Amino acid sequence: MALVKQNPLPVGRYWVDILQKHVPDFNDFARIMNRGIHIEQTKEHLDASGGGVTSYLFVNKNPLVPWDHTKYGWPNDATGITDLDQTGQVPDPAPLFGDLGIGDLTLPLFLLAALWLLSLG
Image (cartoon, rainbow, N blue to C red; front, side, top):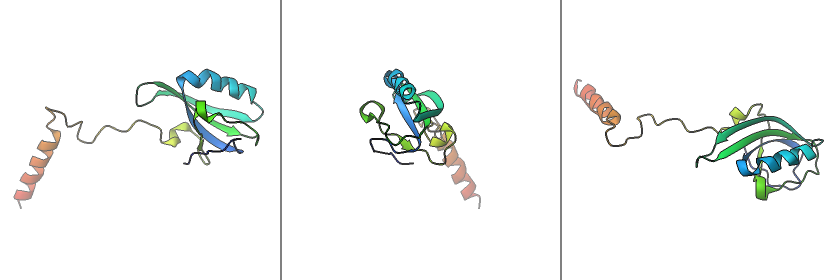
C-alpha cells in the first residue's frame, strides 16, 4: 500500500489515519465533499504514543477533490481493501518469548531445555 501524494486527490479508493484533533475538520470536509467523498468505514484506536486516531476507508469519485495533507497527512491507496483490518495498521503482536525483562525466564529455560535435548543424542 502506497501513499498517494497528489492534490487534487485522484479518483480511487483510500484509507487514512486522522489524529483526533483533526477528526471534526475531516468530518466537515467529508460532509462538504459528499458528492465526491464516500466514507465506507471508520475505526477509532490509539496510536503508538497513546493518542486518539480515527482510520477512514473511503472512495473518491471526484477528480477535483482538494486534499489538505498538512492536517490529514497523505492517504494510502486502498485498491482491493474492503475492511480497515486489512490495512495492517494493527498493534504488533506480543513477543514470542515475552519482553525479556528482569525476571522473565522463558527464553533461558527454553534454551536450557533445547541444550538438554541435544545432549541426549
